[in-house]
Image (cartoon, rainbow, N blue to C red; front, side, top):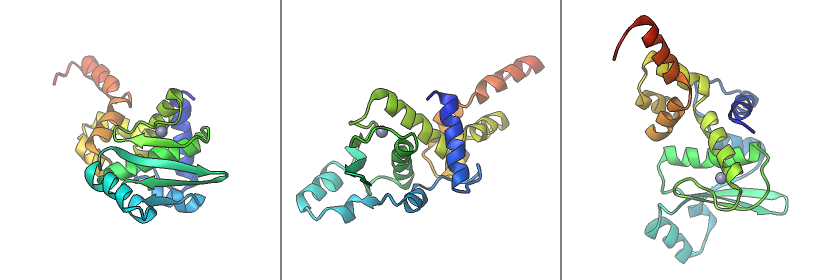
Length: 187
Ligand SMILES: [Zn+2]
């Protein structure tokens, strides 16, 4: 799927869950609606050593993991990351489901790269998750209106990096540049 198709899919998914384009995307709500549990590692494993390794020694090493057992799926996430990161990590996994990607277990690293799926699918999941978290039209309008990434980040409960990336990819800066040139404004 290209970027436009992924953008349309993101719009449809938001619509399916009655989310207006102005509110944050809540992956836990998606999880409830779809019967695919999102479980904190803290509640998942009773293995003390594994828990210590993930949560204390290397909390930054991974963000989320998609586990499949036959037809059942579940997602485990790292509760030590910030609320914004957890939202992004889990929305990335939502994107894999919504894009109907191959059912291979995918471990997600701290840099939000999954280990188990193809590069093309990772790019799709990244783009779709971004579009779910910060709708493209809204990112574009924010750029044109001169709204700061911090404000966008707060509205959608995402990191400033995510808001900045979505605004940069929205096409808003090109529109802004054209209108500045047309009207001879600088700065
Ligand atoms: Zn992935």
